[in-house]
Amino acid sequence: MADSQSLEHKLAILAESAKYDASCSSSGSSRPQAGGLGNVARGGICHSWSADGRCISLLKILLSNACIYDCAYCVNRRGNDGPRATLSPAEVAEITVNFYRRNYIEGLFLSTGVIRDPDYTMEQLIAAARLLREEHRFGGYIHLKVVPGADPRRVEEAGRYADRVSVNIELPSAASLQHLAPDKGRAAILEPMDLAARLIAESRVERRKSRKAPRFAPAGQSTQLIVGASPENDRQILRLSESLYRRMDLKRVYYSAFVPVSADNRLPALAAPPLLREHRLYQADWLLRFYGFTAEDILSDLQPDLDTALDPKAGWALRNLHLFPVEVNRAEYELLLRVPGVGVRSARKILRARRGGSLDFDALRRLGIVLKRARYFLTAQGKYLGEADLAVSDLRARLLALPAPEAHRPRQLDLFAGIAEAEDHFAATVRGEL
Ligand code: SF4
Image (tube, rainbow, N blue to C red; front, side):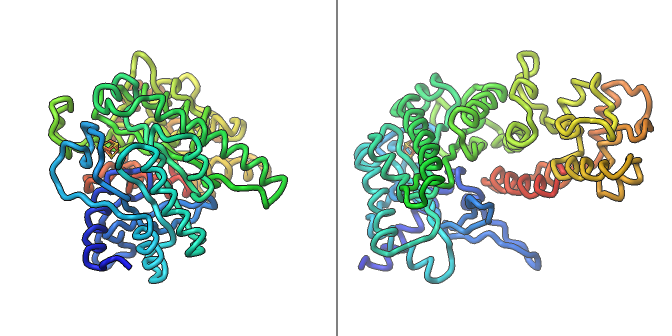
């Protein structure tokens, strides 16, 4: 049994170091609210979404923050001062089981710095997961980080114990990786992702045939991209995300606004972390995944960065005004989804309701469709509620003058604002507000 004081001390250091990994929702966020409902716990507990869509509390820690690599943007880099700690696999298992028994958590998000080399590090992570699964009979959720450059056999083993795996890409181009994270090559990152994608797909097929077939990361894989530490524009970032969703069937790409936690003259001098940019990327990502948009719909050579003033769907509509207004009684589902202010739920409601007869604006209101924004882009029974012949600039001004829906409103939060925004966004989209 490890000494409880030293274990507690190590846990404090390693939970703090793990905060900077956003690929687990609500990483390390702390939002006390007197008199309100909901308070994100400190002490390395974060929230994530399970394969069946439930929100679960996770213990989020690093196995070690004593990294041999020297990525310019990372608080745990070799060249940084600061307290270091490393847990043994047995200690990770012990902490997890203790927290689980006390009902603090339902699962574990385990990441790490690179201890000796990628394979040794992966062996430690796998050993912790194996102890949990086989000795402690732990059936809770496990998210394991895969270390770039690890042997494919380690990747395969990790996925046998984990519900989700993630390899962080961090920087959106090979050139930026070379510049800011020279110890990690692009191939060392993409190869385990590719392998994990194949093993996840194979496991799904096999388990459809037999529930006894071995499972591999049934909650899929995710990754994280840092926004603003390197010069790539939003179009390059979104194209990368689109390709990851298509080619590797990723569950989530997390965007993390660059926060200067490490002094290095290779890093840009930003006045503040680009939280609004991060928020717009989450919105655009949502359009890729659930609204049928492509990266090229959203951004182009002429406009390579997202408009920080306006959400990406409204921006697209303003650039494509020739498609609007659409008649709500005839428009295809895909086009309804492109109407600003009409979300997935609203579009589905419209489709269902119009089977029963033609809809006018009162019928839309009764369905709960919010028309503040949509009225500029819709007709109902041929009637238009917006002002006729508005110039694009006037329409843009009208949209900007409207109070943004809660989920679109950028807020100055703490270091982890982007993650909370992502969750808000998730909730808003479920409510059909986007
Ligand atoms: S590999 Fe790079 S990003 Fe990961 S912990 Fe080490 S220094 Fe940080």
